[in-house]
Amino acid sequence: MSVEVKHVTKKFGGFTALNDVSLRVESGELVALLGPSGSGKTTLLRIIAGLEFPDPGAAQILYYGEDVTMIPASQRKAGFAFQHYALFRHMTVFENIAFGLRVRPAATRPPAAEIRARVEKLLKLIQLEPMAGRFPSQLSGGQRQRVALARALAVEPKVLLLDEPFGALDAKVRKELRRWLRQLHDEIHITTLFVTHDQEEALEVSDRVAILRDGRVEQIGTPEEIYDHPASPFVYDFLGNVNLFHGRAQDGTVTIGDTEFVVGEQKEAPAAPAVAFVRPHDIRVMRDPAGPASLPAKVIRSNAAGPVASLELVRLDSAEPFTVQLSKEEYQQLQPKPGEQLFVQLRNVKVFSDDYSI
Image (cartoon, rainbow, N blue to C red; front, top):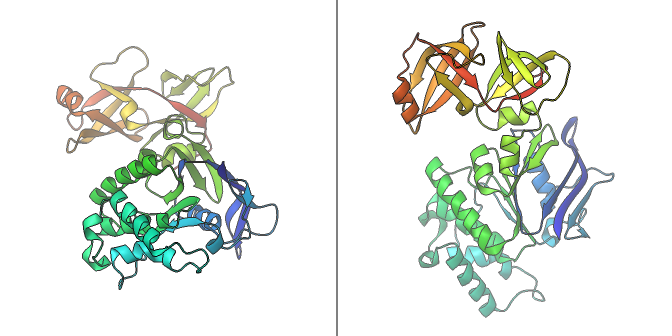
């Protein structure tokens, strides 16, 4: 049982928002659609919801095996929550949650007692039971977003679709709500897709992440898979900070300046220009070279504010800047000073052909 997207293309005039996109979300799975602005995330979500329709062709949208490609949103049984809540200001929290049930045709509308029981259950689920009689203007932003999610769940949807659900909230509330969303999902196990441009949010909340770029799915996998094993330079660069070192790769090694580093995933291959991608926390900093695989660098500045310390350095051989992250303990032991020469070792190096630049 799943939600499937097959060969979906969508153009708006001369702009291709989606280009032959296929995606499968398993029953009970929470999948994040992640990507930069204009990558097609929201368009894909709206097509899954039935708020937009794909261009004519081979496109299919399947809800648990049922083809709903041309069925309107009102008949798809999808719950949809937007970034800006869209709550009715003149209705109480209780009535906002009950709205989707009360407006059903008489033949499918639940009895009043059942509606009340369902809303009370959802109020308990979103931890807002004491606020049932309040109006949206009397709630915080995080509370309003929880009400919007409860309203989407009240109609017992087959799939829950969230478009930047926490985008209008401040950073602290976002963190609290995404933990709450993960706990909620673990309780109700509803198949869920949510759009976000926040990498940390996607990696923390989702079972799998689909990264979109220019209307295509660049990579899909668990948070660990896409972070530790990015399929392309774009994915590596998009997910967190990264340093680029230009060099030459051959037979499982990459040479940067005069220093050679081992690259585990590279097998026998002829020498070719390459770019080594290394995350700031995967660089070891030393006062003295530790064997031949040590690259000389000079400290430009340091910043020890926050949970980790950050160093800005430049290579002595090419003057190219790069960034290193150290634990507070490592930083205190090293005590780096601007202008000082140090040596670095690169770990967990990922090499791509030399045809990419940030």
